Length: 116
Image 1 (cartoon, rainbow, N blue to C red):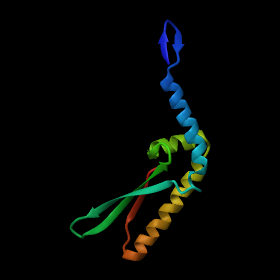
Image 2: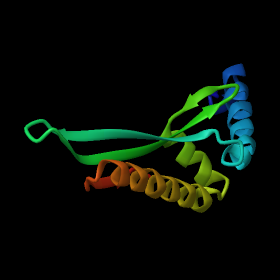
Image 3: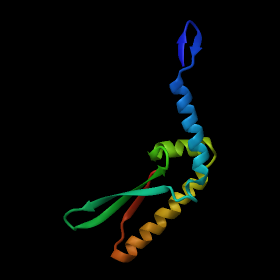
């Protein structure tokens, strides 16, 4: 919207953005069951020891139409649509499962941080 003399003008871009957000909110409700949410891991490696020291985990969404949606936008949409708890629970559960598999197969222990 552009303001001129106290009047607000609507732009087509605003309409497109509003439609995109509404669509994403609806689609987010089924993103878990459709296996569209993904956890991305960024390892911190101790180069001297050659071992993983810590791992940072973050969330992204592989949306079929809009491509990759980053964690900040996913969390904002989850808050707007009251899905923040279910998505947070999914994220934590997935991270625990993934890290347990890695630690079991590598026999190593390391710190994990989860960005929410």
